[in-house]
Figure 1: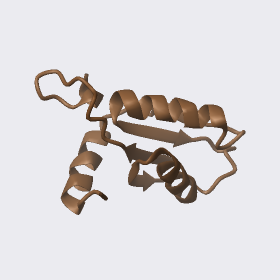
Figure 2 (figure 1 turned 180 degrees about the vertical axis):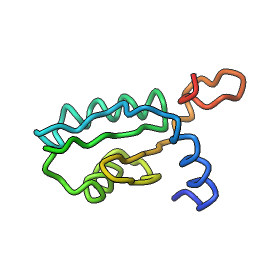
Figure 3 (figure 1 turned 135 degrees about the horizontal axis):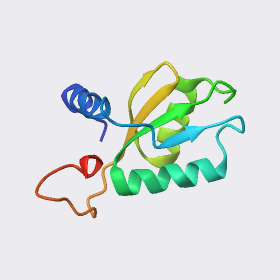
Figure 4 (figure 1 turned 90 degrees about the vertical axis):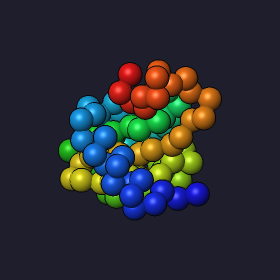
Length: 102
């Protein structure tokens, strides 16, 4: 089920304070990148992706492609940074805090 505009806005606010945890370099969207993104989404749910100058991909297209491949929602794309969200119901939560704040 896609995110509502209110959920997306709340996640954008949360993502503002996050550092990019996945970086796309000159080799573009590789299997290794997809694997590390999948790991990050599994453990943190909300992940910021930084695209390098030499990534050679359109950031919006790449974010949509990665979101589709990972079963994640694209929260936002600003410049060379994209934010993806995928809920993991099996993830332990510390006193109701979301996993990206841990």
